[in-house]
Length: 252
Image (cartoon, rainbow, N blue to C red; front, side):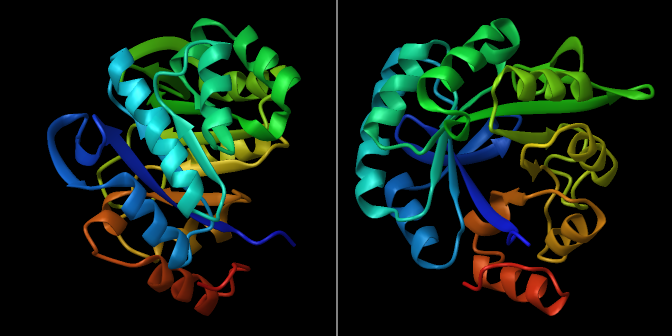
């Protein structure tokens, strides 16, 4: 049985890790290379960077950060945000990222998934899906969870897999920032719909939320940001809780 993964996520803006609510009231939390290196040394299974700077300058900054991180981090790391073209994918992978995540660009141009998968392999392509419940379904949201695309999130996950995605990064817009736990129903629905690994994101407030999602769904990984960045809990504490509850996980 494949071990479950614990993944810290770092939102990066203009070279600094930041945290806010819906990108409002952002607070600087530290240097991304330094924080990523620390997580790598203290048990994180992977690390995800999301570049929330919308400018070209921000993306160039991110490429430099990826290069520096690749020299210091010895776990896989994924970079997303501002990825619009195959050249963006190429640039980030050449800088040292192991995987590239795409969200709005994949929705706007699904062929980008296929192109990136054909060129670099499915294992390098992560499709990020921000999903919000609308009636009996979940819709794919873009623009920080504010724009409803009317796309069915479950059907979009299936299409992303068919087009060559190697992994889904699934964020529940409804639970994000609430800290009451992952959206189990959404996560279960997506995991059942695809054969590729799914990362659950959105809603972590305490370590117990990780074993809950691992035991109630067949999700491959759980992601969190603020509980790690604000030193509320460590990766090791999360893993110890998982191990104590019988989850197959790599020890920190």
